[in-house]
Length: 272
Image (cartoon, rainbow, N blue to C red; front, side, top):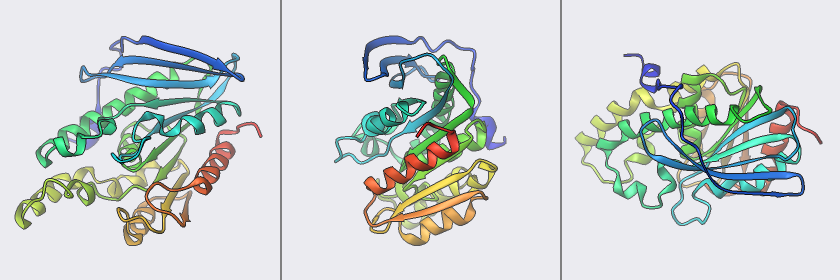
C-alpha cells in the first residue's frame, strides 16, 4: 500500500463541532471549540481571525512538544496568530497527541506507527476545518509547525498538497531520532524499529512539498537537532527553500518569530 493511502479518511463525516467560548478585541475574533477527530477522539482548537468579513489568508499552527514548557500545547502560537490576524490571516491552533505532557512516556515504539498515521489524518482534517471558515482563501494557505509539528506537517503535506507554503521549526529528519529516547531499546530492536519507521521519516517526503516555498528554522544550540541533522533535512528539500539559523536552543527565539512572520506575510500577501 502506498504510504499516502494510509492517510485517507472520510472527509464527508461531520466533525460535530461544539462551541466553548468566544471573544473579540481590537478587531480580532477568537473562538474556542471542540470537535470529533476521524478516530473518534474529541479535540479542542482555537480559531483566531479578523472580526470583519472578508477574504483572508489561512494558517494552520501546530505546536511543539516540551513537557517542561507552559506552551507545549495549542497556546504556543496564540500571540503570533493574533498579530497575523491583524494583518489579514485566519489561524487555527489545534491539539495533537503530544498536547498531553505525559504522552511521550505513555507511548512505546509499538504505538508509533499507528499514532503517526492517526496524527497525519487529524492534521488533514484540521485543514478542512480551517478552510471551511468563512473568508478563508484556499489559495493562500500556510502551515507552521514546531518540533513534532514540523515533522508531521511534512508527512501531511506530502499526502495532502493543499498548503501553499510551510514554516518548519526545529524538526529532526527521522522519527527514531526522538522516538528512541524512550523507552530504551537494545541494539537489535533499535535497528528493527528504525527500519519500520523509515517509510514515514520526513526526510524522505520533504522534497514532495515542492513547489511550495519552505522556511526551515533551527537553533545553533539545540540539543535535539544537531547541525548535521538540520542540514541534511534542508538538503533533502526541493527549491524554493530557505534555511535560517538562530543563536538559541530548541525553543527558538523572538528573532525567529519576527523572521517567520515577515516570511509568511510576504508569501500570503498580508497587510503591512
